[in-house]
Image (tube, rainbow over all chains, first blue to last red; front, side, top):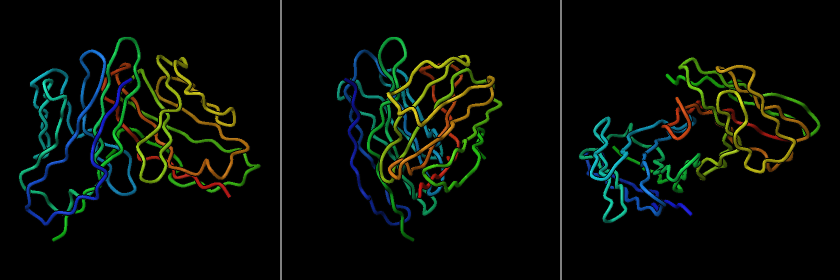
Length: 113
Length: 112
């Protein structure tokens, strides 16, 4: 079956530090890959996506590149802010017909001033 | 601002009560979803509607009853819930199945 592996955290960084949250996956076929962000007390927001190998998704200073050879989709940001504190979920959709979204466990990011 | 609106934001109910959660979107999306999310866990899929027809029921207990009155609305009727059903209930929509989903902010449900 499909699966997504990411660190649970929490990841604690100082403001303006570089962020990497690792995400690796196993899936049938060629999955579409996503990063969602959940701020405290809110639902999930789609942060970025990539639908084929070597695609780079980007939004709000965050980036992730679809690496088929390493089955990875690591999230990066060059300079984090306190407002980036949230839980980040890596996710995928794969397979023929309807396939439900497979989420990772979520990584909590805490950015301190 | 989220484009998927859920009401109420918070709900406290007893185990014998009947209540409903509501979800609305006006993006023209034809797929809508209910998820349950426990603390520090990812969302778990409950139901999927496509073109107002129930497509997926992830073996959810019958005390949860979904309804899709039209393409913009999705309800979740609750009856005789258990304390372990306390969670954040999220609604989502997407243009079609397998496309990125847009989530509402959820209803935080507490069962006494």
